[in-house]
Image 1 (spheres, each protein chain N blue to C red):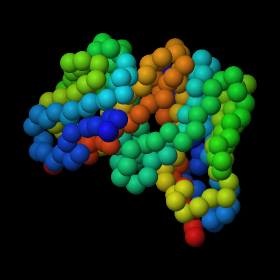
Image 2 (cartoon, each protein chain N blue to C red):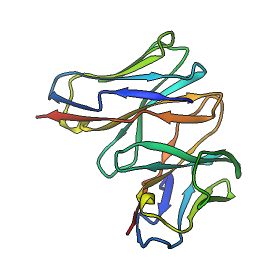
Image 3 (cartoon, each protein chain N blue to C red):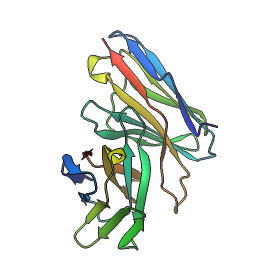
Length: 114
Length: 112
């Protein structure tokens, strides 16, 4: 009964490859997010979707493309991976209601680019 | 742009002592201030939050205070235990930006 799940948990790949990370939430939330946590533990928002529509797109390289097939899923595809993309990527969801901003994080995907 | 500053970056306390972590935010429209705890290799988890219409909130050994005028908010942990050791993040939600801005984190070590 995992609330927010991500796959894979670990991803090791070479520079130049293309990879995807999948996220699913079973909480019925309207809003989903992708965060990047670098080696210094900084948590930074990358994208936010509300009911399958992109509402936040931070200054993220075009190599990163989120896709939301439905409001329970938000995937992240990364093209032409670079060394600097190595980080932990967290998916999160929130009800998106005016009175409920709490974000529920997935377990994270540790991406290592060699 | 919006910014949340968090201090200290590391904090070491003796078991049983109190720990205080402070944050300052820049967006006057911020109205929701959560605190997350992240244990090593785990996901961030919400431990307490406060809204802008409240000055203080307490949950057992954890309390959060908010000073909207000064744009400061703080996390207080009393009677610390070794299992409190983790990285703690403050964050601020701005109605103008529709996103959480996180502080840089505080690594808390509770020495037995």
